[in-house]
Each structure stands twice: as C-alpha cells, then as structure tokens.
Length: 330
Length: 279
Image 1 (cartoon, helix red, strand yellow):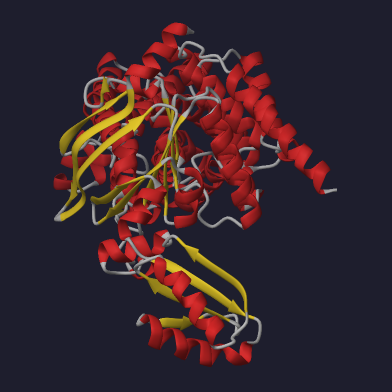
Image 2: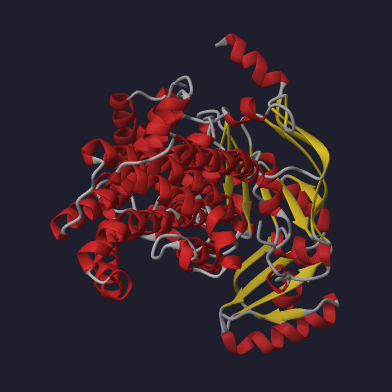
C-alpha cells in the first residue's frame, strides 16, 4: 500500500506533449499539452468538433497520434500500450456495450474478458448492478434501457475492474437532470476511491461541478487551462444581478444604472430582474447606492463571477453554442 | 421524506464505494478463455435475436428445393439425377454465401461503441474474431446438416457414405473459416452495412454462380471455363463432390487447402492490422 502511495505521489496520470492528429487536411488535434495529477478530475471543455474525442481516443490507445508523445502513469503511449490498457477504461460517447444483451450478460462478458473466473464474474456483475441501482433491469436487454440507465451500465462496465484512469466522453450528454445528477454522484464516488478521471463535456456547469482543472479546447488547441475560478477570474468581468420589488420600476432602474455606471444593462427574462456586465466589482456597490437614491426598492442583489460561458466568449470571441462545426467522426 | 431519499442515495454511494474499493485486478485471460468468452457472446446474441438463424435454416431449404426443381428437368432430365450432381455444389454455395455475415456483424460492432471497449481491454485481440468464427462454424454445420438431411429425404444417395459426408463438411468448414477473413477485412474497411453488403455480393455472386455448382464447365465457352477452373469455389465443389460420391483425389483436397491457406495468409493479418489501427 505504501508502495502504491509513493507511486501516486511521484507519477502523473497523464503527461502529454504536443499531441497532433490530422484527418485529411483537418488538424483535429493541433498540439495538445497535458499534465494531469493522479486522483483528480480533469475536464475537457469545448464545442462539438473541438478535438475532445480525438484527444481522448489517442490517450486511450485507440488512435495513434501523428506527432507528440504521452506518458500514462509513466508508460509510453506508443510502445507500452498493453501496460496502459490494463490500467485505463473508456466510456465512449456512444454506448460501449452490446445493446442486444441484457445488463447482467454485458457485465459478466466484460468481467470474463478482464480475467475473472466464471463464478466471480457473476458475483462482480451483481455487485455492480446493485451499486448502480440497476438490479431490477439486470435481465432486460440494454436496448430497452432509458438513457440514464444506459449510461450507468456503460460506466459500470468501465469499472468492472476499477481502473486507475477513467476516460468519460460526454458522460451526461442527452440525459435528464436527475440522471445527470446520478452520473455526477458516481463520478465523485469513483474519484474519492482514487480513480483519476478525464472527462469531456460541452456543458460549462458540468466542468464547473466536477473538474479540479479545466482545459478549454477549441479547434484542436487548448486555449486556456486552470481551475474553474482561475479561468473565470482571468476574464476579469463579473455579472451584476438585480431583482426589483416592483417590475414597473425596471425601465427606470435601467436608465439610472446605464447613465451612472456607463455599462450596458440587459433586462432579464424575469420582468423584475436585470443584469449588467461590470469590469470592476466596486461598481456593484455604487449601483446599489444609485438605486437607493432614486427610491427604487431592490429585493435581491448579487455580484457574481463570470460564467464559463462568458469565459469561452472572451477567449474565442464567439459564444460556445454557435461554434457548431462539422463533427469529425473518428 | 427527503431525508430518507438522501439516506438511500448515501447508501448507494457507499455500496458503489465498496464495489470500487473491493475490486481486485485478476490476471488477464489467456487466448483460449477470451476466445471462448467471445464465442459465448455470439451464442447469447443468437439467443436474443433468433432471426439470425434464418440464413442457416430457411435459406438452405429454399435454395435446395428451388434449384433442384427449377433446373433439374432442364439440365439433367430428371430432378433426382440432378440432385446427385447439385447437392454438393448448392451446399458449398449456400454456406459460402452466409460467411459474409461475419463481416456484417463486425461492421455493426464498429459502428456501435463496443468495438472501442474491446480494443481497450487487456486481451489477445484476435480472440474477439476467433470467438465469433467458432460460433459461425456451428452455424455452418447447422446449415450443412439441414441441407444434407433434406437432400437425403429428397433422394440424394452419396456413394462416399457417412465418412464421405463428414469429410466434405469438415473441408467446407475449413474453407469457410478461411474465407471469413476476407469479410472481416472488408467489414473493417467499409463505412456502412449497405456498402459492405454491396461489395460482398459483388464478390460472392460471380464467385458462386460462375462455377461448377450448377452445370458441368465443359458446356461453357472456353474463356469462361478458364475462370471456372481456377475459381476456389469450383475447387471446393469438386473436392466435396469427390468426397460425397467417392473418387476424391489428394490433389482436389490439396487445392482447397492451398486456397484456404492463401486466404488466411493474406486476409487474417490484414484484418488484425486494420483491427488494431482502426481510426
């Protein structure tokens, strides 16, 4: 055990330098450097076609990089793939299980392929099904599972033998909020047990919630890297949210703030609320004072960090959801 | 209420934590065990989708009946005479045609995500293919048995006896196992099931029809005879006929084994190369 701890302290889970993957003329991944300590969650945030999946597939030994090098737990990605395979697991964007088989059959299949003897494979499969709250569905074909159940069985298949490094490619895309929260809980539990997680997501909130560090990736390049709050503070502006007692006064409030603060004010969808981008937090206090002077009653008032949406906008000059690009199919 | 929901959730997380923490790392399976596991997957798939067996049950029956009664009178003068000539050929043709489903299954696995999962497992990779080829051998045996039994009922009388039939089925299985690697190669190259089907058909139809399955090649124009004579299907049909009716020569069997070997030597490494390096 102490041996293992020692390795954990000294070896990075992933150390990559200058990874490149080219499809035809398209540079899907264009010089990615990564350094991910063990036991952490690393988030890859970016729009469709940014190169997230391609990077993960390279790191999971599925795709040969065209340039660059990477060490997974100190093992060379090009020459020590067998060593690496025995320590990683991948849950792909598309269900990486046999949909025609039942839940239990899928897990037993993977357990057998991992080397468990028949009896133990079955025990392990049942243990996981129960931990993932899928016992009732164990004898149903996976194609009849809901989206959330499918994701859970997929992750369960990835941890039949607890991996040291788990790749999760868009683990919650298309899930309802309840299923999404379940998947988040699962990821947090895995990390608390010591697994390193590299996940990709298009959702800023997901990266914010789960990841210790985030890389913002766009057009095959990492354009920013850091903790969620580092990324937010690098942008420098904050958001002022004001809700008034009387919605009738909103017009007036907007006029007052616009003239005194010289910033642009946006009415929010709630008829009593408005938001403003302020570069300097001290303007927030000033705004509150101006509103009081005009006798406009405020029910809530908050000054927040910029959202990751704004971070992305600032970094790329384009909002994230408008950056839809042709997805490069691996 | 929320408290109990909270507790349930906590309980499940603890259970998950136990499951994660208790996991040992067994040593990876050997090539035999992983091949058998993949074979069991193929069997489970048949259990869940029994329609898959159509091609090895209903097709052979339809083919045998159709061609015997359609061509029998015209080609040989009587259906029972023609059956003696046709059965070995139609058996080879039917089973050779169903080998292409091996490629289609693989192609489906690739387009779904499970192919990626298998490739990240610490196993001997060819076992994924060998497992399904083992089950295919069972399927081919099934198709052969059905055709031969139906043939016997219709009046097929092989002089080679039971031993001859066993030998011919064994030779057929060896050949089909080898031919399957062509389809796995194509299955890895083609992007969609449709295009794969088209290419497979384009190869299989001329190969099985322009052969000695239906007619004696003597009756063909000489340029066509040249192709028929070297067509591996013709070589196999000649050997199977020889085994079933007696009079097989070592050379006939030798040619089939050589053709099989060539298929394996070219297409098995190509399949494995593509399997490992699939984008």
